[in-house]
Image (cartoon, rainbow, N blue to C red; front, side, top):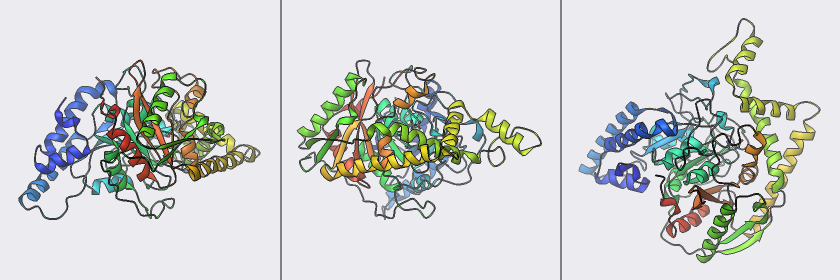
Length: 490
Ligand code: GLN
């Protein structure tokens, strides 16, 4: 492996500025690695080597000039390679959302999150694989083949941001954008042994993110450590006139120092998150990590989030309901391929019938049913009420503790094909991640151990609204004093 693909963001940024390597060499190193490994892993659905190299040359010229007369500030991410989940629009690159129904669609604009990072100097390497329209927990629902877990090629990388997580784990990108509607940043981060941030709902613009569940969707980041995540997060966060659900609050400049003293921090451990049937090594690793936070000075308290058990049914009513409405626009007329004949209905019927995959159809049916006259109050309406109770659980807990530490998934990465015949078993993988999305609170994910088969185990810290900085700080203290996040797959 080239030394360059081992660098984290700080290493990349400093190395470029000092002229230790050129941006062209850096980008080339990534593409060489992608060429030699991604045939097996399938993290990327699309790459743009030519475009990336062109930008790298521009970066090299800017850097050369700056080194001659170092005046002013360089853009903070100048020359940083970035992978983008294929549900976010990048101008001029195909955006498939892992679906055949968007085959050939090339957005003429950038998502706000992407645009901000491009303005900060990042270079997009390509678009990463995802479950179709981000519906799934394993990346097996992609119409373009499964992504393999770099730790064990017979295992899933998690999902739906499985391509981004695998790309970071396999050193095919130093950092990647993902999205988290019900766990899709945190769970693949956990399965692939990398770090991830799911920001507060409304913290990062959803403009240019292809909608799945609009009241739940958040753009997040996957990377190697908290410093890298914090840097990308603060650059893409903030209010956006193009997304009315973004919140106009100042985004802190996050400075993570070397301090590991957590004595001012109260960590809550929700008793509902340790359930029978969970893999014992996962529970053991989480308990050990919580103990570690305690050793760093944190006060650990048991808390209760009593409505946790309803998160799964509530999510699987609300998310499909929103999806069924959002996906109505794929009619064979406005985007992607068109099948069918003369009549409008025939076009709808054939295009949607042939181009949507089975999981997407299942959710459109579930969602349409939950929203239909006569069932609306019993299903969708009731789910919304219980969602409020779940939110109140968090509000109550955050009166007592600063953050909540919990497992991300009941198991480590499962085998490819293990749950594909049983959608309910797949949905059950999401029990621990859905509540944060329903409440809208932020969460970070980071590696805290390995199981007996050498598969990574991740933990999440959930925080109060807009408290991402605190989450980064605590997880950073953990990473300063442990080395799980430094391990790499063979
Ligand atoms: N696994 C969940 C689902 O299938 C969450 C996916 C996501 O966060 N995009 O809906």
